[in-house]
Amino acid sequence: SDAQDSAPRADATHDSGAPHDTTAADVLGPAADLHFSAFEIALNGEEHRVRYAVTICNRGNATAAATLFAVYNDLARPPTSSDRISVQLPVPRLAPTQCVERAIAQGPLEARRYRSWGFVDVENRVLESDESNNIVRFRDFEFTQD
Image: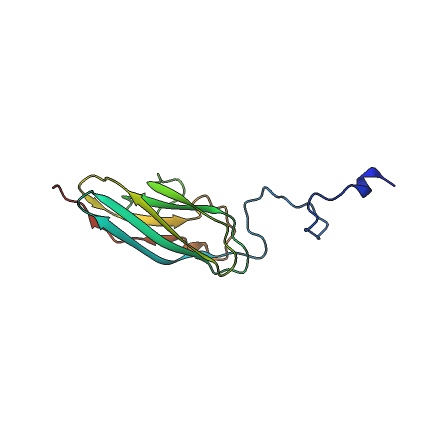
């Protein structure tokens, strides 16, 4: 018997016979679909801080790989992955129908008007059935001088 034939497979749970790439950042199965099911901001005007809170869900039919949620400030248009991130948080792997709540604070910020956007899967790690719902615009806000 050939030594290769008797060697255990690297991934015994993968039964297609093809090698399983454990470094791939794509989803397992047909397609995930990350989206924002809730989003809000809370302001602390005295300290010039803002708190972004989001609920991110996977409404696809495959598990979504771990990825990032980012907030972008001061863009007149929706962000792209090449724009400068203001703050970011990790998003864990999400099974179909699973959701996760994330909150992040930023500040103190300068006294002026802000337009903020949220973006899940900034690095495009997750193969999704609908990439168009990964960005949300938070309401504009303004901090004034004391």
